[in-house]
Amino acid sequence: MNERHGTADPGPTTGEGGAGLVALAGLAAYTELAAFGLLASRSVDAPDLGTRQALATAAGRALHRQRGLLDLAAVHGVEPASVMAPFDGVLADFDARTTPGNWHEGLLKGVVGHGVAEDFCRLLAAGLAQDQVDALRSAVALDAEVPDASEVLTAAAAADAVLASRLGLWGRRVVGEALGLVPTLLTAHPELSALAARARAAVERDGGALPGDDGGLQSWFMARLTAEHTRRMDRMHLAA
Amino acid sequence: MNERHGTADPGPTTGEGGAGLVALAGLAAYTELAAFGLLASRSVDAPDLGTRQALATAAGRALHRQRGLLDLAAVHGVEPASVMAPFDGVLADFDARTTPGNWHEGLLKGVVGHGVAEDFCRLLAAGLAQDQVDALRSAVALDAEVPDASEVLTAAAAADAVLASRLGLWGRRVVGEALGLVPTLLTAHPELSALAARARAAVERDGGALPGDDGGLQSWFMARLTAEHTRRMDRMHLAA
Image 1 (cartoon, helix red, strand yellow):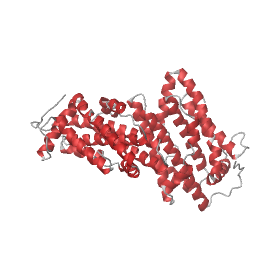
Image 2 (tube, one colour; image 1 turned 90 degrees about the vertical axis):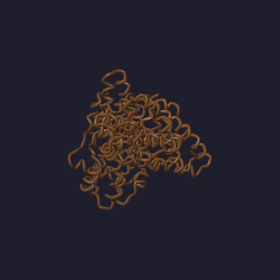
Image 3 (cartoon, rainbow over the protein chains, first blue to last red; image 1 turned 30 degrees about the vertical axis):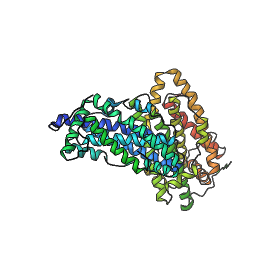
Image 4 (cartoon, rainbow over the protein chains, first blue to last red; image 1 turned 45 degrees about the vertical axis):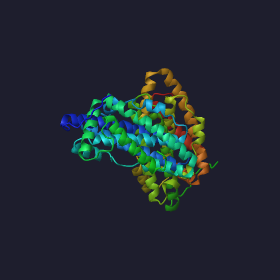
């Protein structure tokens, strides 16, 4: 495990910052492609035409964000094929461990999995230089919500208390598996763990410490990703 | 069956032409949504990252064309939800009869099914007034190819003669089922059969008759859709 208690990081130079930006763009692009697949699959077997259209549109938006990330990497001289390649297969275990039991579970898997991935990328972006954050933000609206998919779940849960309670349990399982990817990613990708250390330093410098933040880098991320997950489930009126 | 031997059609008035345009936009939007689903599904279980990306991009393009069609219908005062609704479920039989045996068959189903749908819509568009054709053409590149999906099949067939021969047989089955939808659509949708009669009249007025064109409206469409299918299979070096 690549645990760091990084506070002494001098901040990005152009070189290492560029590597961090490209690695982050690659990870984000890969997870957007995964989100596209999860949303599109649930569009295909959606219960009605309106839902089918809404999820297709949400899938298209994921692809649009991915295009922005791939274009950003291309500006830094890295081809789309190469920028995502280091992350190819990284979600295979997550997928295998979270086979949905029904359509709603499949959709919640997409919402939770993509939500964690987006939160993780947003946190990592705090370790970039400001001009890189700006470039990333204009490539893809970092704080863009995908309301369609969560709205479908919010409505379904509101109409069926049993489903809502099952989805709460399912969300807990999915988020557990998703969070389990964080150590794997940080260990396997030195550019990401360097970026993660810089992100932590930057957030704490700006006074963004949480109670219990004296642990390692991984638990620092876990605390924030878990908090965001709780907020996301709350917004859907699902038990986190 | 709504067979017509229409040559005496006076051409579109604004009213009926508008209804024809909206019906055509609805059919085309619905089949683009179907193409999105077929391409996205084959992106999800693609054998490698490059193919996965190529098919996701192709699916995104189908969605982009669909957006143009829905926007065009909206200009004519018809909401996205209503413009596709008359065609909801029209592909269910086609889907049930063409369950692919493997990944390549699934992809060819998308290419052939979408190809026939696009050709049918393009033929129908000949029955619109010129300004409507222009509006449709600017909403969605009517003759845009989706090279990615066919290129994947062309390469796979070139590398495996047994696969190529099986895909040839499969394509014949898929196109048979797809062509079977034409009479169903013309019978169920008077705006489309009126447009079809005008399209035939317009094409024949422009000297576009084929040998054996003295049959009914449906066989007139069959002859043209079959010819286009043969060209499409030829381009992929598959037996039609």
